[in-house]
Image 1 (tube, rainbow, N blue to C red):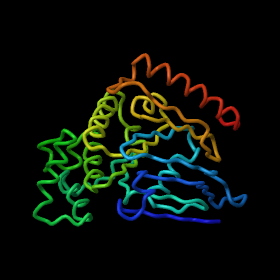
Image 2 (spheres, helix red, strand yellow):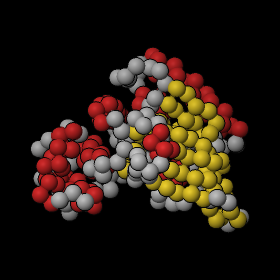
Image 3 (cartoon, rainbow, N blue to C red):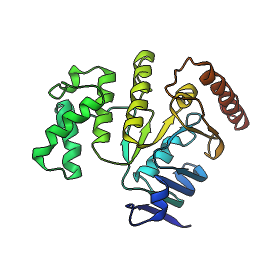
Image 4 (tube, rainbow, N blue to C red):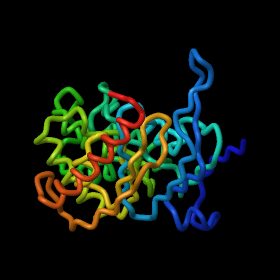
Length: 264
């Protein structure tokens, strides 16, 4: 089985120039009580520069596993993954260090990136302004609401200066209103920065509201079941008629995949 993991600069690899991420024939198995369990099966997917793609599917279909493979946190059992530089990763949990302030959490990412000490505070404050948390530099994690913590986590991910942002259900634990606000903020930041985004969710309307393209994974083993191009103009709202209509179509397809694999 051929396994390749690579990152590339724009001058090194034409594949990376043309694609923020290229996933080719990737499969992943884990050892289980009954032997090797196939979680992902022959996944091929490109994310273009500046593209927003959502990965959608039932719980346990391998969405997060695929994201971890793209992030380089694990290796595929077969296939290849190439990204344009090292991706930044944002989780459902904010994973902020509670003993550091909001600003210092961001500065840590800037330090790891190699930014000189004298430049870090200014850049951390700029990123906090970008996520609309100006003035929060000195606040401790316990002083921030759930939505504010995720904004800091987003700023910390942006501090990594990656062209590809990987997001694993980052708003799932938030209440509906906060989640709605952060959908709008993420869309604004994506438009302003030109980042490529690969966003994992099990929420169909969230997928349609945010993405240019929705990719549906079948239930385990995860395979690409279908893709939709989302031509609805931004900004979108969860309650928009066009969002609701496409969400219904995708939901019916998702239900069919779940029934076909005998889950739930």
